[in-house]
Image 1 (cartoon, rainbow, N blue to C red):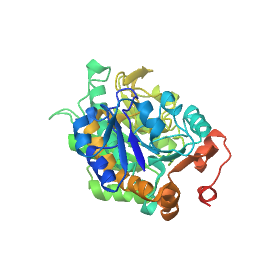
Image 2 (image 1 turned 180 degrees about the vertical axis):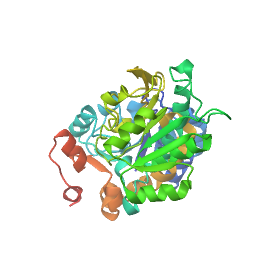
Image 3 (image 1 turned 30 degrees about the vertical axis):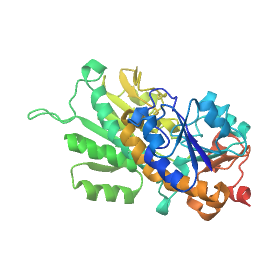
Length: 371
């Protein structure tokens, strides 16, 4: 198979779909790998490194989109990229379609076979291709929130860890999954006063056992959430419903109860955000203020630590890329129901139920596509 990766063009996105090491693996299995010139510079990977791995450097994205059977990316294709996709081609990347009707419409129109990292499953309802970026984003959320709390950045002027004689900052983490766990780890490590909210008793028990009293775990109800948000210096939105739009848990009315200069970090923004006042921002302009509350809603947070993120992502995406390339996408999906769960769009049909329901498309089960 001819596999291509292009330079990511989303604002301040420095990750790349394939590392030189991943390219080498694909080449070793007999595949052709085409890489757009400069695609790896954001992670410190030169064209020469890709060439040494056996890849072929191409001058522009158009050449790769036109000739490659599978496109491996990181972020969802932008409009100019979607216009170059075609029927019979495999797109393998993060998509986050539920809150993005324009992207969904373009993918349906193109006829492309689109496999989304974020809905590929693993044992025990896990999301192994989303997990490493959730780990990165959770940890970055605390760094970003701590910076936004600084007075010069519009925040309350609170140091999360406090100092002797001064109370630490109060951090509320909404959601105890991968993002929430990693955010809590970082916040606890800084010495903050941390509370984690979730509705799953098993998750709360696991977190309570892990943190051994260094973080509070509380069942998330509306009244409890409202009270904790009102008292927080930093709120991390870490809620995920796989493939679907995130619920709006923190309302506009709640902002009026918060301290001026408090910070909201919405890690769920890729799925539309879990705060009513959220809208996507970029690393260039990461924050904005609503009702005296600072909002950090960068939609590609892991792009800020591109090298770490790219290598963590390739560790989990490469095995599936190899199966798709070695077997063809249909055989690979038939052989692996976890990978089959990643199919979101194929030949003009929406094959992921949550996306179809959210955006009003007829739902075509993956089994019907695979035959």
